[in-house]
Image 1 (cartoon, rainbow, N blue to C red):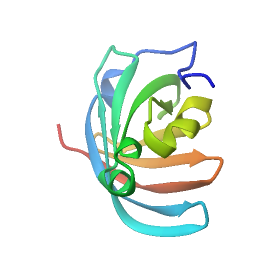
Image 2 (cartoon, rainbow, N blue to C red; image 1 turned 180 degrees about the horizontal axis):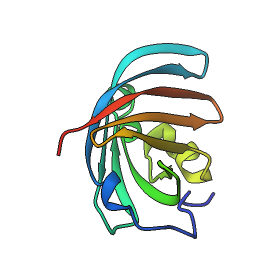
Image 3 (cartoon, helix red, strand yellow; image 1 turned 45 degrees about the vertical axis):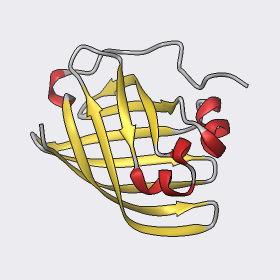
Length: 129
């Protein structure tokens, strides 16, 4: 099994840099969920960031945090791969198949979407820093 880290990355543009927080709704492995907190921490000029989902970590601490790798910027959307997950989520995080997009709506609002083989989630995040 690989690390899930993409071989080609890009630096995070300044307009995406900051701490993004909000809640997401979705479905994973046949289970529906609503209002799950998510935080992304992205720094301008760096190819990696932090993904934090405390609710995912309640059932397995390794599932609640991972590393985001910026892979593409297209128009107002930043594409990222989520990797370096632990616990039971290590398999998904090790395949490179967990994708995150952040689409800017304005300076401090963005649409968030996470897709993976066993489900997806989406919501709106607000830049807090």
